[in-house]
Length: 512
Image 1 (cartoon, rainbow, N blue to C red):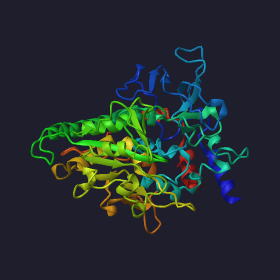
Image 2 (cartoon, helix red, strand yellow):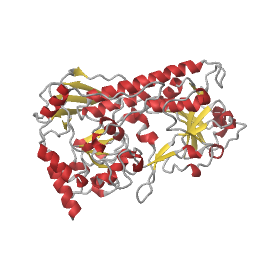
Image 3 (tube, rainbow, N blue to C red):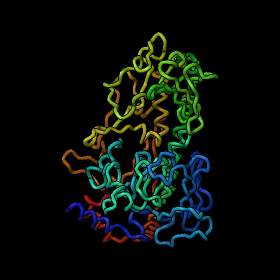
Image 4 (cartoon, one colour):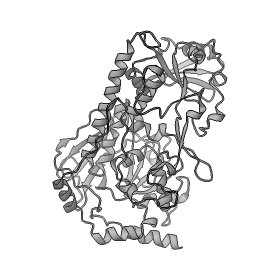
């Protein structure tokens, strides 16, 4: 009863509609017209006086046919109008406001994070204080795992009725201002008016996905910070790509000036597949290598399918397509194995590439190499959490925000002794070295204290620093000018008493 009462008191202390959070940024006054989006292709933003209109892609942004809310299945994801707190909510009679829009007051005061994809971008922007509800079970970020220790009311499993299905006060997701989900309904909050699909997994290309930091920034008026982070990530990525271009024809490498061939493969049910998503093939090319070409005509026992990003994939039935699949594997110098990545990431339980795909080293040169050029994607995972011992993989919830780290790791895997990044390997591990997998937990957050004196408040003050992986590159933190600080203070309506109350009830106030 005490926990429930404390939570209700905390919820009651949050800024009311129309008030701005004490930590919020003012509406960006230097932007007008269309926003600056260079790579991401699934959303656009147009700025007006005190509101922004965000529209999803006409061709790809639909709710999935399997979405848990039947009324949304197969429908277009509607546009959104984000309007500044303290201003009048826009109407459809105002310029650019669509008739079917969803409306959100910004900066967002309290948010539900329905899956891992959006979380790293909240951490990068330093706005984790807005997180009111999250399922920590498959989260790999150490400092976001620490949220459960610092603010235990923040975490409940999405499978519990209290997340969205309970009509009582415990229907937590519907009480927040926004629910970041995806088109499949991951972490669905039960209220379509608060639903914001974070469609990063449909956007092709590594830099395209990294630029979704700008999408998240729209809800917090953090456009300047997002632009600053993305530009440095892009510069680091391009510097690594330039090194890949040099290695491509370097006669002193293991490949003697030839382009190595790389492929991603996986076993799904009763078939083996070549998983040529666009972002994967782009990473291979930018690393200075080439993608293993697929046959022009589907071999016996195999078929071609199109990925959501338009990439051509090949699936081979077991055992009818085994011979054809082995022939494609034989072309590769480096193979990334995605089989059985979830839910068990224990290297000791990996059955071995030869066993999984029914091949021998004589048939697959990448397997015959010493050491074998076979890698997996679960190089960094979280420690087991909760009654179900759930484990999260950084490939799924962090990797998309770090294309530079991903590219650097792939280059290390491909070029071996001929290339070493300043970041080291993070996402890939060579299957001949199971000890290379890194398991992280909340104790790996620099704000953790073994004595129980965790620096919880700094979880919200701390900006996660992206790794810089090309030689000589160091991430430069953006500084806020005095004028900007004064402008931000003037724009925020929440008073000192509110901030003080937030600290008093911090253990029960999920947003702080």
